[in-house]
Length: 427
Image 1 (cartoon, rainbow, N blue to C red):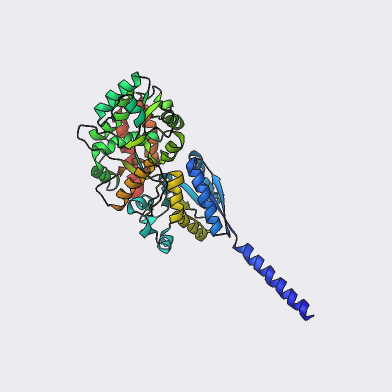
Image 2: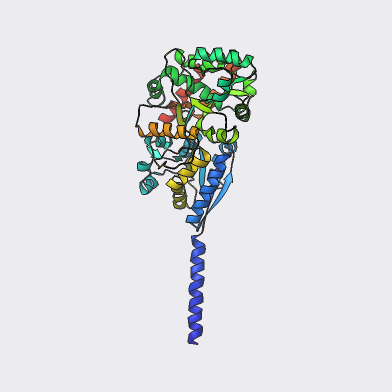
């Protein structure tokens, strides 16, 4: 009898242990949009996290950008969305205002994020003095140049707008697409505007407009910035004739294949350049060309997407633990080596196995992020303006390119929507 009692106690303890273990099991649904090399990096990082935390299962769903933008709000509001969302910064501000994602300030203190993140990288996900997410893709925008083909053709990389226009006419006459720019996908127009705008206004003036709300969008300088890509470069045959029908995939493919000589876009494409282009081709990145001789040339910067925690998640602490790991030393090296991303955190780069183009991006962002040099990065406008403003950028710049709308009319519409944004923010 005594043995049976002991056996029953042992079995009861084992049963209780299994029950407690089962209760500790957590599943986090994570929506992200990582593709290409970033998909491989995310898979490796998520698996490593689960190996460290066997009681937490990451159920990952790859949701394309357009689908996340269309469904995130409804899914989060209905409770059918993810625990963790990797989403563009601009629409996520609206999710925060709607109470659908949570502030992370307590977790920032717990995990020491304020000490680990570059202030210039963290500021993109601060709203109303609250941290609402952690941005992964600290990016800057400029022009990628196929240096090998340029040299073979005897082309010098243009440094001014006048040189750009002359180059485009000659390169297109030889059968090349000078700039792999397209507007069907919409968002590339953000940068065809922001790059000349930063160079014309200067970083300080644009900072005053975007952050201090001092200035206007319908000034002669802004109108000039609209005209650069959408009228002057169009008329110089810098793009394919149907630039409004040319989408992002076509842009990339034309540059990767050597059909196009330059690709105006951001550092998020570095991994795919390395993966898709012949190893013997040398690619460099330069800031967009000066509008006038001796004028300013800057890279424009911002935070593409960030990780957020859903307000309806039953496991916010586990979600925060997961996000913290995403920015750990181990994970950041994987993001850099596999995906070509440079998260806005300080980390040891010794022995990092990355190609020269990725090394350039890393060094540039490190210098700008730490303030260790004189380098300053400009601003990607779309990350600081409303969705209505951004929609007007897409539709309006396409209309200007198609000669349906003037640059002056587009500038007036941007100013109108800016005033609307300011009024809504002050309510």
